[in-house]
Amino acid sequence: MTDYSLTTRLLALDTATEACSVALLDNNKISAEFALTPREHTQRILPMIEQSLLTHKLKLQQLDALVCCLGPGSFTGVRIGIGIAQGLAYGAKIPLIGVSSLETLAQGAWRLHRAERVLVAIDARMDEVYWAVYERDAKGVWQGKETEQVLSPQAAIEQMAGLSGKWLTAGTGWQAYPQLLQGHTLHLQPSDSLLPHAEDMLPLAYRLWLANSVTNPAEIEPVYLRNEVTWKKLPGR
Image (spheres, rainbow, N blue to C red):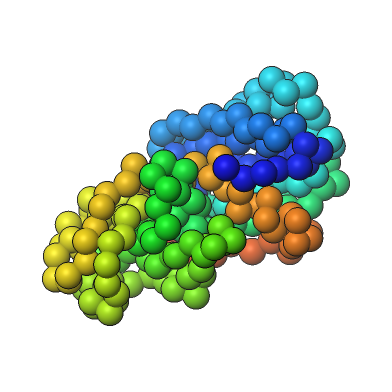
C-alpha cells in the first residue's frame, strides 16, 4: 500500500476505454467508483466527480491536482477525459497530472495480485493491440514506459519470445486475440485487471506529484500511439 501524505488531495478520472471511473485521495484514504458505460461517458463522468467531492465535503479548489488518463484507448474516450479534466482544472486553477492507461493496468495487476511483471495488451481494433511490458522495481516504480506501442498480435508474440519466466497479463487484448497466448514459452497468468480503474491511477500520480511533475492544463497532451487519421477509419468512430 502506498504511504500517502495526509494532506495531499488528488482526484483521478478515466474515460479512455469502455469504463468510466473516478477516485479521490483524501486524508490518506481512497474512495472510488467504477462503471461500464459504453457511449455514456459524457453523461456519467461529471455526476461521478460531483458525488465524490460531495461525499468528502470538498470543492475542486481544495484539491492539489486533477489526474487524467492520457491514453492510449478509444480516441473519443481519451479526448472526453482530457477535455473534462482541462476544463475543471482551469476553473479551479489547479494543475493536471497525466498517466498512462497501460501503466494503470499494470498497477491494477499489482493491487489485485501483487504482480511485479505484467504484460499489458488493450484491444486497439484493426487487428492490433496497445502493448507494454512492465516490471516493478524495488522502489515500486514501473519500468517499461519505452515499450508502449501499437502493434499486431504477431509482433507481440515475437516480443514475448525474447522474454522468459512468469508474467501476469492485463487488458482486453488477451481475450480479443487468443493467439497471444501461443507461440512462446512464457508462463502467463491472467489477472482481473482488464480495464483501467481510476484508483490505480492515484499511486502513479502521487509519485509524480512528489516529484513536482505536474502539467499546466493548456499543455496536457493525449497519447494515442496511433494517429488521429487512423482512428477515424474505425467503424462507428
